[in-house]
Image 1: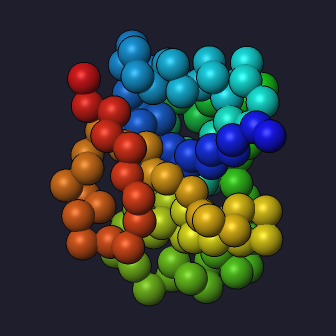
Image 2 (image 1 turned 120 degrees about the vertical axis):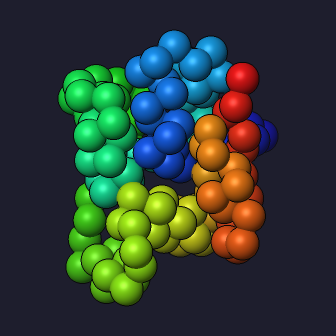
Length: 126
């Protein structure tokens, strides 16, 4: 049986991937090359990453191992009350779903941002 790993890239991880962060690059490679590895890019986080590093959104959206998560009605209602939509959409995407009963891990280069949140974190700080 293949182990399954679901990882949500926050905006800092997306920006890092475009900036040569080797850990982020390895995640992207594994999601493309290995069965059971899934990477998700929440749309709101993708927008913030593209603001920080123009071209990031187009690049990540073109990668076969990355699934862009739309801002659907349920997500919009869940994040509308938050201060930053990028963080809120990433947190929402990491919650358990029918497809991801154990939820997902959030990959980030800013782990302090998630210290008070009920999520699992994968620190991509080099």
